[in-house]
Length: 317
Image 1 (cartoon, rainbow, N blue to C red):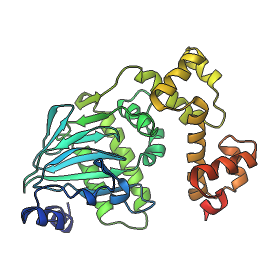
Image 2 (tube, rainbow, N blue to C red; image 1 turned 45 degrees about the horizontal axis):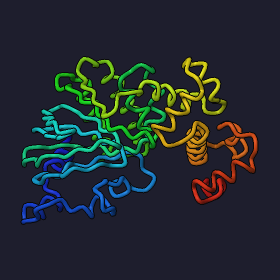
Image 3 (cartoon, rainbow, N blue to C red; image 1 turned 30 degrees about the horizontal axis):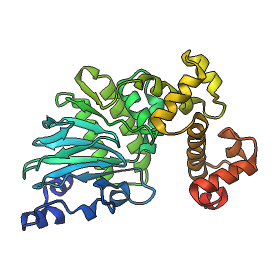
Image 4 (cartoon, one colour; image 1 turned 30 degrees about the vertical axis):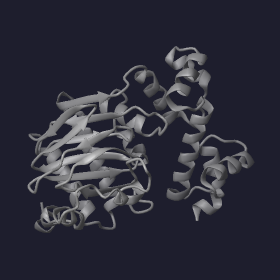
């Protein structure tokens, strides 16, 4: 790793200096405005940015908390001890843990020689990357559930990959791109993260998987995958045929795990995809309406404005 990046990783941050000078606890206002300790991506990521890195704050215990983003912790040097579901997990140098946005965990205080890099990732970052992985991959299944914010089961993936040179090399390249951004960094980071996930999936024997609720998860993942791939023309009837499950059972499962109906879940997907296309593509609004599966422009404008607070035209600008 470049010397200047290494120096940034090992240097004391302002927060760490305050802790060493006598601050006893984590300053929650740096992480959230809520009474409950839910770390907010808006505190850590610039507006519109989908991924960034942040060195884990040393010398202080992080009490139980959640976050509204995907957190990937990489032990660059030393160790990191997490407590999840009452169980201690001690990550060694070179190891990685993926935490979804519903996991509750606490972190023991790290020492001076412990350098932990946290990747802060909004779930929608993985929308494109999922296309690079096969459906039955353990990482794919983890990522699919992160894209549906109403599926609230805490999950993690723990990768013991110190000896995997290609994985370590990709992690260093991603860190370099994030610390020293260039014009092409956004594209490079997506490509590198995609390659990293492919390499991690090839080493499934080194993955420890945890979920607070495995019951019915496989059916829910299949539902999410179907909507993700077929949202323009998706129907509950077709889904029922594909999964060989009656409509009422699928409707009940969707409501139980997401609090939404199939129609509402499908609408969330279509609107989020329309929002991405408005910002990232050259399609006209009329073309986007058709691409995401709506035939009535007036209805689309109505539900889009209800969700985002502005018309599609203003959102585009």
